[in-house]
Length: 426
Ligand code: BJ8
Image 1 (spheres, rainbow, N blue to C red):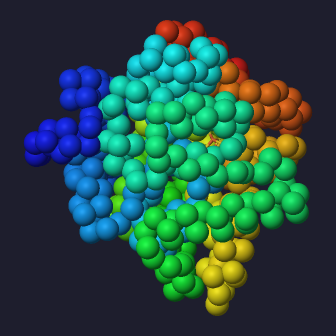
Image 2: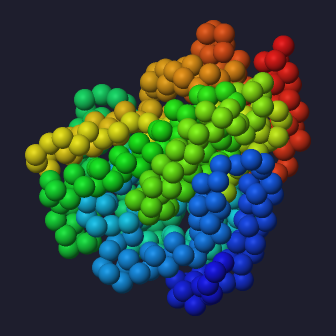
């Protein structure tokens, strides 16, 4: 890291020794997983820099933003509307964690059979190693799966700035009305916190900024249907993960530069993988930073990931928010319309997700689908049964993987994957 940030971390209340251990292991992992890839787009150097400064420069920016009176809003779910946060001059940061850290501490609050994404968020808080969490003025928990919604009750005993947002579970008129009421309450809470007022102008600006970020990611996604694949799934996943942390304007600019570069690579037939590599679409649970395990195994098995039907993927940016409207009411309706289309497995029934997986399979010229689930994630695991049988009926090869953040099952996953890839080739 370019600068010494230790005083800043100490001021945020981090446990410096434990934090050093975390940063050390992430940087080692990043070197092994990312920097060892060959022929990456040059523009990925920006993301290498972002990761090298993920607890440094970006946190300094957050601390400076706080000094200017901006509020930092942390969240764990793509249902929390960044448009509204930006409109009220806030900074939105994702807090989902993708590493097995301080799980013994977390298990004092949560049963062992809780998914690792939730345990990790607790572990990061209890071990005091996440500067994003510590810098947040408000942390938004959302009532999505049972694991999350009940764990926020526990989390409220260790956080004094937790705000709970209710989320509908059915795509009905009353569900939509609930989402709108919750977004209006959220606006009110942020107005109180920031001392600012929402207006059609600032909301339009917020919508535009977030849409630009989504459009840039959608450009990258479109280009991934080329053969040979111009970028690895690991690199695309990294962009999706950084999507939740970075300055949105800088992020958009960097992603657009990579999209320009990919267009050139496609013209030159310059791929990250050979043109006969098996093309995989990954669907399922989000992969929070630094959860790179399954993509790394896939891409070291003569396959390349060409799309992610994940919240750290298509689900996070495929749909834009309509920017037309002359009143706050119109624009809030547009925001509700956009978010209500997110096909998270907490909704029942959830046919749009299956539809989108099939669409993506075609759009990206995929050869097979890996349905990735975290152990103990009931919504995605139960829905996985439907996904598997429907894809099989449609003649789409599918492999279900349920795993966690540990390295213990790497060998087993690798063996199953290799057999899957052979089956596709055959
Ligand atoms: S919109 S996917 S980010 S809720 S993996 S904690 S579902 S038990 S993360 Fe999610 Fe929002 Fe939906 Fe996306 Fe629960 Fe499953 Fe754990 Fe999960």
